[in-house]
Image (cartoon, rainbow, N blue to C red; front, side):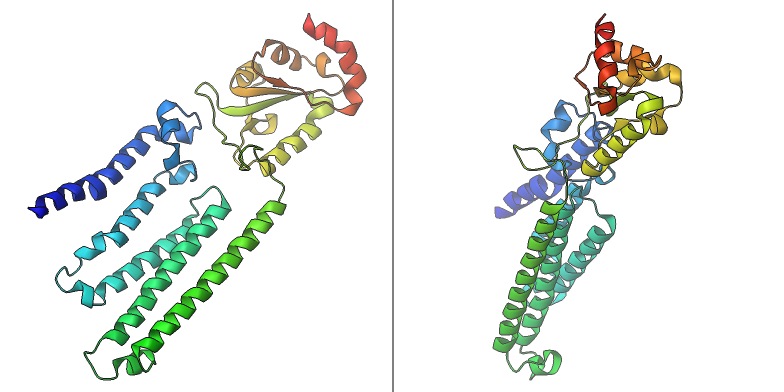
Length: 309
């Protein structure tokens, strides 16, 4: 009678859950790639927010790996698998391959997450390999098998070696995490005061850019480009409209302004005298931020009343 319950729960968890996650990610993929997150994509943010857009389905791959190592590996040699080495060998190979895939693909947005995932899989691979050593020393199929194949006189010595090596790996892993965290704290980044993490760079469905910086080409172009490049370094993934990167037609400037969530004005000398700047600044109705150049303050004071009219 228990077989029916087993197969029912087997279909519910190891089969339907990964399939449901895959279908859901496939459904919201266009929204996530374009960074225009809707209600459904926002509700299942836990499936994709830690990964690069090109590795949207990595959570499903990781879930399949966990299911295989935790349960599906038991289907290997069901009758005598617990006394054989095949399960440990297969688990070691799967963990090593996944570790190699992590190192090559680098699917995480945050480098800290990548290091933690690599360390966890490295420890898991080593545990499976060390389990093979213990298994060989516990076997009594041949006389002095532990001494001949592994180099220990007894299973007790092999177990002590495995425990010491595992403790050493944990200490080294903790040191790597601490050093990585310390170096990340010293790096200049933009983080939210409420969470201490970088902000989620999401876009509304109507926009393709987080910001549009309006500036006078003659007096503010170099400074604006410097501001944008610094923002891109401090806030990886931010999309800011910049003329050298996105301008194809000067006549479509107002459309580009409407395609950004935030309108920023770099107020340098002669800004309001520029023909291209005036329509953009006067027609924009979304949140505005106005950084200015020190040399532009007299011009701004004279031009501000005219811009309000």
